[in-house]
Image (cartoon, rainbow, N blue to C red; front, top):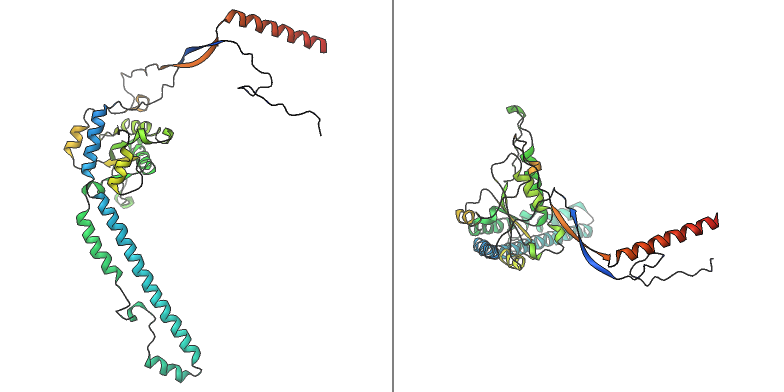
Length: 325
């Protein structure tokens, strides 16, 4: 084992040679930013609050409906478990009765005197609760009470991302002629029209940084229905979760079939995101504007003295190298 002890670095840097503590100053360097970027739309805070209030008004009754569905689901599960438990007890009783009787005649007598209930139809009515009828009646009642918005809304970052990816793919897919006998009937999801994001409440922010690019990709294809990306004010995540009756909701999407002219009028000032490099080529194609950002860094206060010290260090290193050779 080597007797050399491990070196402990007490400086800010873990380099083998400690950096000299020279006086430094803060400088800003201009660098070219990535041109293929899509910025978040700028929305005034008063418009964000108005949009949030309108969404909460549309979601009235959603929380109560969710709690009712959860209660009905628990009731159906308890009824199914009790039904299975009663059927299992009767089957076990049948096996015990068959073990006690040694002859076929005795077994037949036992079967005629006390019929074995092997199926759910033979279980006494006082034991069985019809979960199907209970489900149908509750489903009919819940369908009447379901708010209209719940039929046209999807929640969650993953679900909205999948829908936007599908929509972007369909907007750029080439049109093909399909014969009637080759046509397969597939129900495609309705495209989204609005995407609401609780941007100030999402941590880390990298979870939603891809959504502006997806929305711009959808809007830059062969489409007539543009998607609007709307950021909601801080604290809207908890308010929307309480309105929906769930624990958390960061992204909310509404499809094109939801009829709400007031919401469309309210979101008219929101700009439409687009990516010019993904749009259809045209004869009068404009260049992407240059994006310049400033990088904050440090530099020595006395650049001349720093250069002289650096040159002396290089000369000393060359002398050491010649001595070794």
